[in-house]
Image (cartoon, rainbow, N blue to C red; front, side):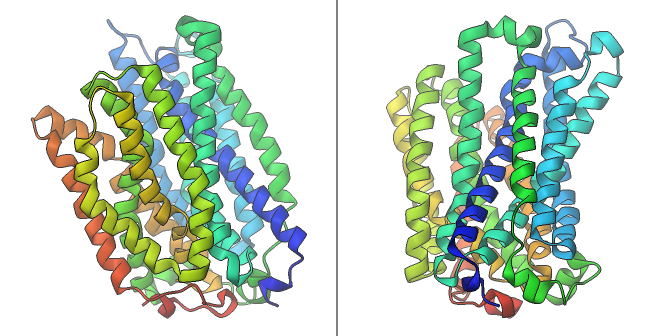
Length: 433
């Protein structure tokens, strides 16, 4: 049965449920990074100045990235074997469980080394969840949508991603204003993790009631394979490499312009923290508005033009966008807005474009490991690269590094075939060659 046979109300409900769950996941994932400065001394010895505790907490944050590829492999394979609903449910359960562990963990002063061990356990669960979430949600929304609206449906993955991140950022702003920094250090830092765990229960309810996709029911379940990830590497290595190429430039572009740039201008150009926050928020809201429009456009003209536009735009403009930055928050707003609008060309269509590369029985696994591994290698290391370049006086090379990775992606996009008219129930990896 075609996905067009599914009642429209079921498709809309599935879109809303998947998007809300994805947003909750990203709220939980980013709350750690945002509130780490307040709870670091609660989990590690303070040392003479607290620096050691902060570095240890950030090291645990990095461990979450390390476990993302493992989650991309294990959770994606689980999703292909047991269904999209089961995979999405397990993903939100792991994320909410990780947040709950962090929220209720005792401090170092209370239990010693057990405190950082529990923090690490919570972050591992979140890393596994995040590693599998993108692939499971991409497969689900691509299969849920009618063929003529896959790009539009796909765009809501990044819409919910950014909304979840903004919610965590704005919550931090409110809590600092209400409780003060010392209030957050004294225990207020637990609030976002309790909220994340409670919201996770709501996400769990939404996902347990999802309808399974017709593509999986009509084909993937009957053609179930025991080891989907190994099957992808054996039968569809070119398509898996394309996922790497699709992701390499985009992940560093996203982590730079959506996550790191406000921090960079605060340290490099002394932009006021509050002004940087609101400039960043405004730029991200503009991107959110653009994503569904670009997704719908791709359903008319195809995925390739938008993907090529994203990569070519970054190759040509990322260095000038960095040169715009100065001590004014307006320069941050302008640079972020242009950078994120270019990224939106990718973010709106990449999830479904990757899903269209693989047959149903290995679709999630085909995206999972290659995507998560590439994000960990290039996205997760972006702040480290720019800091290291700055330490040796070569910070001006960082935008060129982004341009080179986007050039790699551009070559992949140019050499890939259009996939918007692929029928997912009978798709084969060769369709992307």
